[in-house]
Length: 397
Image (tube, rainbow, N blue to C red; front, side, top):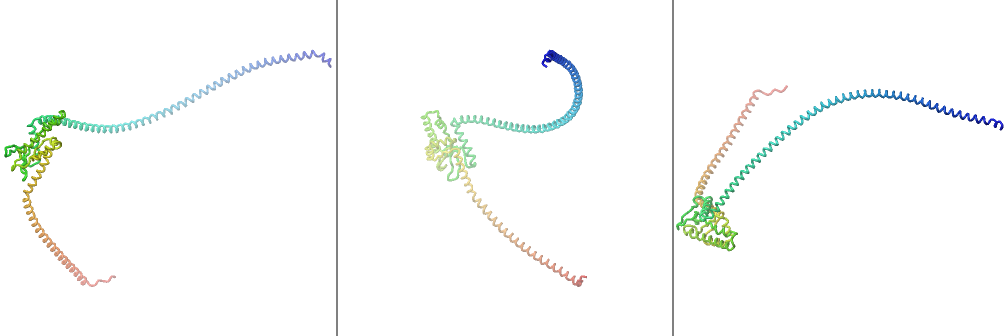
């Protein structure tokens, strides 16, 4: 066995080598076959893929064409719908714009009317205000003119009061105006010459026992201004005060000596100071001068106090006139009493006549009632006779 094996060893080795070679050849062929088959399959696959790709592209192109046609149709439909919608919207918008235009025009007209009305009112108020302003400006112009005139008058008054004669005339004019306004014409007299040949500015004719009261206007102004001048020294102002008191005393003495005449005038006279400031200065800071004037029976008066005196004098005159007319009043009252007594008698007679007439009326009414009763009896009697003649009444069936 081992010999057979040893003898057949080279053949088996060759056989094995042959088998191996055959296997290698088969493997090479298989690879070649695979390559060829792969190449053929690749070419077939490429052809198939190319055909399928062409078919797919053709189908895709056809589908795209159909889709494009469909999209075009839908687009045309949408355009038509959109056009119709736009047309309807345009019509609606036109209508809305027209309505809005009418509304806006109406509101604008209303607003224009209101604006015009307010403008008219504003113009009217402005015109009224302008007219008022013009009127006030005119009033201001008039006031300015009056102020200018007053300034001129003040300057003129200062010039007037700077002269003694002018001051005297000014006091006399003021005195005359006050007296004429307060008393009746027969109760005063101006520039009267007294029995001692002196001329007094005014005489008041008052009832007894007062009689004639002389009133003389005095205006001691120079020393009054000097003592109030702040630019002067104290010694000069004191000297001016002394001179002012002396001026007033001198005027008091002159009035007491000239215008108080026993048996002719009253036992007192009045010195009229046309300036309230001078009067107040005397009574406030120079009472001794006022006491001196009272001791000389001279009463210092200002325009205000003179009005009070004249008012009292007018009341006295009125009372005197009333007393003078009291007998006339008494006679009138007596006649009135007689007339009233006669009226009372006639009224009583009329009352008696009215009472008698009332009694007569009552008697007439009584007679009328009696006559009416008789007529009623007569009528009732006639009815009874008629019933008796017609017989008894038939009983009802």
